[in-house]
Image (cartoon, rainbow over all chains, first blue to last red; front, top):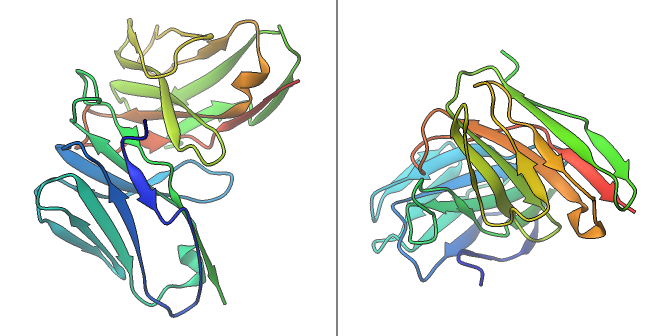
Length: 115
Length: 114
């Protein structure tokens, strides 16, 4: 059972286009994090969202946490080749996170931005 | 400040061999984690530690062992390697547990078991 479903699994776009990727669950999480992973490296945290309905912006990236804290989205405006990578969402504090609130990761969205 | 370092970067093992994946962090973090990442499968938690001398199982602990004798080091031991353990292994650390704190990841160890 995949507790966090990410879609799409793959996305290939041209530089300058906008895109949205999704992270959905049937479980409620107390917080949700987004990481970006480049080939041959470990994931790097982009943002943590905590409050239902919360919107956070990081330059051209906009993150939203669903009102019910079960889903999240990442929107990139005017994508650049440097945005290429694997985007992972990770939820914490849900019923599957264990007593320590360990992170549960989705499978990721692999984004390729072509020049 | 090196962050989280892992050695080796690559390793090929034969079935039945054993090895230890090393992980060290210099951020004085209490929490440390071991994940495995299989193609298209995201990250799965193998073991974690909330401080020196304290470890606990994650989602996929079978075939692995860990120890945490110091705050800095969190080695992962593979006994009797099997092809199913072919994966990329990531070590991570965080100051606090839970989902409110950033996990810092190492660069990974790519392991192949033949």
